[in-house]
Image 1 (cartoon, helix red, strand yellow):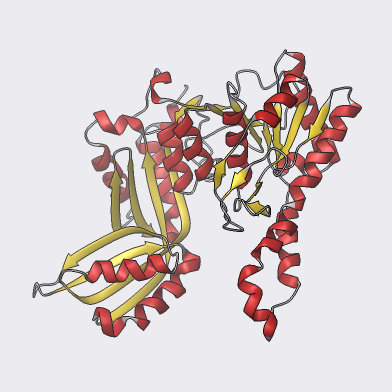
Image 2 (image 1 turned 180 degrees about the horizontal axis):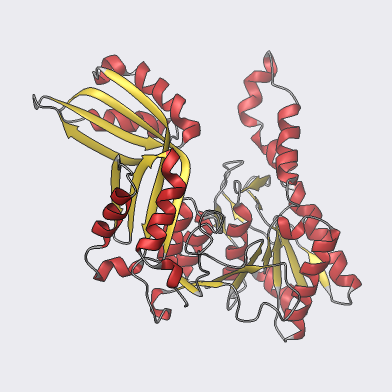
Length: 417
């Protein structure tokens, strides 16, 4: 069982989480729990590390190696909630203990602030659970080979939860959050959005990577790799009210009624960069994207079109909005080597995507999408596809209109009706 920041926001919510845990124990289950920090606490801790001041002089020379202390600070939020939940469970009469990332241990790479799980020896965890203990593990944290605390990056508690479930050989990983499942789209945009009873690992991975914030992308990747079923459900219920609720993320084969399109996702964190008059020759694209990769800038959509002369091309690609100016600087610094004429940056775009395993066996899916957008007067700037996804780049001003149009076009408001 994993409880997010809103579920741990204060003592009353921690008591509610404890009652949900106790109900599972009363039902005869062995339980491990992973917790996030209280809502907003990680942001506060990050601000404190920033407020410690920028290094100057000799201190600046060692600043690059100081992220290990950043991890010490920001990992403390989960340690607090783990202890509080264990205390609360004990006060309810249940044997519980917290177990820090280094005690489990959750072994990670040495890349501080964005470590990846490398190994998870499960003996300590399983022995504690077999002895009747409810084990409460702080999410988001682990330990590197040199014995230093590490963190998994923002949203890493979901990944911690899936890793604990796999290590404990659990039957399922329940993610308790402030929503009661995975919806066909954002209910804040489309009031007719429907909660899905089940969604495949592949669909959830696409939706998470496309902007749906219900689950963190790395957690879905890990769950899919180990075929660990994950259920998303609300923590704002009393024990017994969540039976048969939520959304189960599972193998495609477990879904009897597959939808052609299961969801519409969107992301406003997009920027379009266009290189004009690019030499149309071998090695140019490698020079462009090699430089961006070296700067750890993730590139998403890429389109290249030849100019009439044939010797030159225009190329556009998208990056996260926060990386746009840095990407433009890198391109301009390499302008003489790459040989393009001009560069344009457009941060007023958004990406709209449809996702569904049913696309594999149905025709006309793309036509429906393009016609629905056309009827609303929405121009498509870029198109990107995969086996179960179609994404388009549009003017940001039309984001909500596009989401609602596509939701209606694929009949998603009728799911479960």
